[in-house]
Amino acid sequence: MAPRVQLTNAERAEIGRHYAVGGCSGKEMSIWATKKFGMKVNTMTISLIIWKEEKWLSADLAPHEKRSRKPECENMEKLLYVWFCSMQERSVTLTDELVTDKAKQLYNTIPRDCESTKNFKSFHGWLSGFKKRYNIKSYARHGEAGSVEITQEVLAKIESLKQLISQFDPEDVYNVDETGLFFRLEPRRSLATKKMSGKKASKGRLTIALTCNMTGTDKLVPFVIHKYNRPHAFTKRNIRRADNLGILWHSNTKVWMMIDLFEMFLVKFEKHLRLVGKEKVLLLLDNFSGHKIVSVQSQIRIIRVEFFPPNVTAVYQPMDCGFVLSRLTTGSIL
Image (cartoon, rainbow, N blue to C red; front, side, top):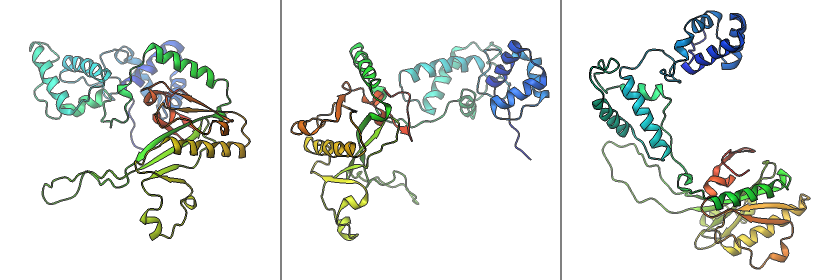
């Protein structure tokens, strides 16, 4: 037996609006709703929604809630959601404790004779219902995009980059970015019979430069930087050359991209482009101090290098924004 599926208030409201505009029959509405929401919506459900059309179109109902039952303290929740959205816009980290404390403050400001608050007795178990009604979930915060300040000068530079990108075929627009792999980090949580003290986190890492074109059809092998040219793990496993691992392996004491390594990368990238028959490509980079061309200008003829404005790569650089297969995120410049 198939599990029972309920429509949300927003979906019920959309059915009401569609009926008001189209004036379709119940059977036609059932077929439309089934295709629209990906679940079986029979004619009886459609009839009940249309019968109470004004109720579902009301702005008082939480859009993601599946039941029409009103919360015990409706006025307080409306004020709390407005506060929550304002804090979210300011990129403030919100926890269950902060939201509950704010709810208590708002509840104390509402007159007790208000019909929508007089039945509210306890905050125990209320928070989960509030988050469900307003589709609030816990998300991990990644990256530094929240600290980026977009100025008119930055927007002008980004617009000029977009115009430049439009002059190239999407397959000829590349982006490269470095990321760190902390391969010795231990989990922060551990099974134990008692509370245990933590240990200092290991800083052992690799720097990995990833390169890909705009369409995702040309992905270069990772350019890996380690502290040692031949680590003990290579000797132990009989690995004579790191190239046999399908990567480009280099080393320096700082384990970071330096000018000499970047120039080496560009020369190898140029050779790769010649092999695949490219004539001219655009390479987008952040303005990191290691991304400079000092002694290999004469060898770089196919690649045109362009830099992003300072401190905005977390918003505009595709590799920093993240992508899935060949689909770049909407936040990136591409």
